[in-house]
Image 1 (cartoon, rainbow, N blue to C red):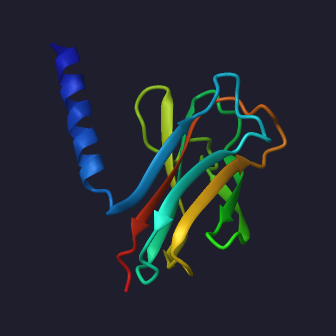
Image 2: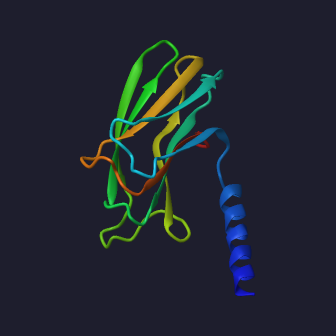
Length: 158
């Protein structure tokens, strides 16, 4: 009986969380090897842009388990534009507060984080874009990281 209640609550929470998302233009996620995330292993996402006027918000989605050894993570985010130009962002992400409590959401052993790093950004040219995400931590492989994702949403700011 109690198991049914927990399952029902989990389904309701999932539906509420997914219904509150912004308008996704692109969303992708890649699993990380159970042996850990190597510093030289980047996760790549590709999408096409036709509209250069609409502004977008950029997010990195991270999922880790309770064995993740740090309260933060540094990420290198490399953009490749259709004209061949490249841009690198370095992002510092706090994953836990000063007491060590995870800032993300999740159930059980897994913690999810959605990290916004560019807001109200338009694309300079139409065409094929890609983004590569790698970690910049001193420890490699990085234990406990399970998934890395990228999400692109239409911005709601005017």
